[in-house]
Length: 512
Ligand code: FAD
Ligand code: DLZ
Ligand code: SF4
Image 1 (cartoon, rainbow, N blue to C red):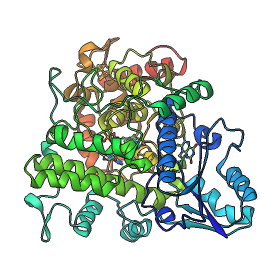
Image 2: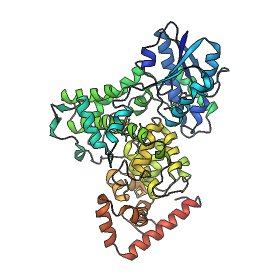
Image 3: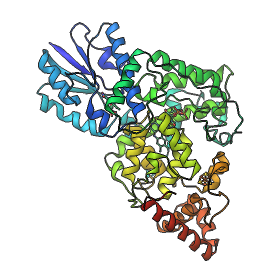
Image 4: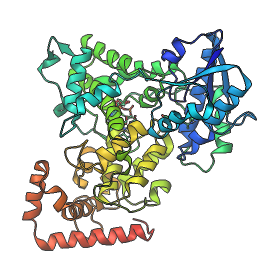
């Protein structure tokens, strides 16, 4: 008798125990491109093309390594449309006495898998996913009994546990965090090294036409397509980043420049999250660059903190707070997403640039996601459910375990402050400081009122005013409320009136 091993689209890692412990002679690996996973939100076309191509290449590689593989293409006559139905169908055709899967990244699928054994009438084993550096239980142990869940303290424990950037018991360089050196704006003429690009091979070309035919009504540009689709290519992306961009990564981590979406970022999240790269190899490559003297500590520590700190933290946070994390709505915001989140038609240049780049690339870097789009979502009172769906579908690296904590905890504060110590809101002056967007904008960033005033300015003070009862007791908001109390009533009233007029336009689908 044999085991049927289901490998999901974001589990493309040969060292997963379900694969490394498989009996190649008898067991069968199943990978399937299914409608249910591709449409439970209408993922960006480029995200689907990337994942289907990576799955097909991975399946081929497994076959070359002697595995028996059943690969179900999206347009195959054998395609049953969902993972469960596909398993049922495969079980009926063979003699399997066991189904094995690895813990999925999303709560909805995990809940469904927990019912599979009953439905299928064969034992179903769900293995832990060992690709993370902290287990779900480890996070739980760290979190239980705490009043606040701050990434920084979790990160220090991870540094100690894994001995990353440590000198004995102390952090290398004497400090745990070098963020103070990582907030420089960038000149628009900065010559940033080119990001990695790969011409679509025959497999990717076939997938691109499949996506064009079957997902034509999904958001986003399908071509040009240049993403890596194999582990070898993904390693090339990582190595090019370490050699060419890591040295400046820290310094320019928060900078934004019109027409330059890639900057000094690593562009590896989509590969990490589907398993083509592992977190530890990315962390080790950066640590080695520091010891070899090819990248400074502020960059290396900053990059490692994103993976060893933030990435691990949000994954533990997700499982600790689900399912409530998805339904929280601390500020009771209910406004629908404006049309420009899909068609990019807005006079706010910062929003237009960030959404246009998202549409073109299924990518935007962290500060664009956080301080431009995310900041707007909170200031404009958009519904957490709408915002969560948008972020989950538009980015090639988005899976709910990583998207939801960032959206609910980091940008919307809809979890009531479990993840962030205060809402990440800012007026237009932050965007002006960190980007050159305001230079080409129909609005004036220096103006708080008046027809051409920057919407981020009056929406910001309107939010501060509206949420006073909920936020004024927060020590990290004390300075802001001091400034607010000193502002003249006339000024506040004028900004509230502008904010209301702007919101009315949003609700009437007028261009803003
Ligand atoms: P770099 O800037 O080069 O950072 C290196 C790596 O660190 C990333 O590849 C990623 O693996 C990790 N990382 C950095 N920040 C975070 C973070 N806050 N949470 C988890 N990992 C992090 N990241 C996703 O992988 N998937 C998502 O769906 C996602 N949604 C986000 C939604 C919002 C509202 C915000 C504010 C952030 C989100 N992020 C998400 C985090 C971050 O923006 C992306 O990981 C990053 O922009 C990916 O680009 P990069 O690979 O060039 O990252
Ligand atoms: C994101 C995605 C898409 C678009 N399509 C598939 C698919 O056809 N088959 C599959 O196995 N996985 C797909 N995925 C990834 C899953 O949605 C992901 O495994 C779950 O959301 C759990 O993280
Ligand atoms: Fe954005 Fe305001 Fe600057 Fe325009 S002026 S780009 S809306 S911050």
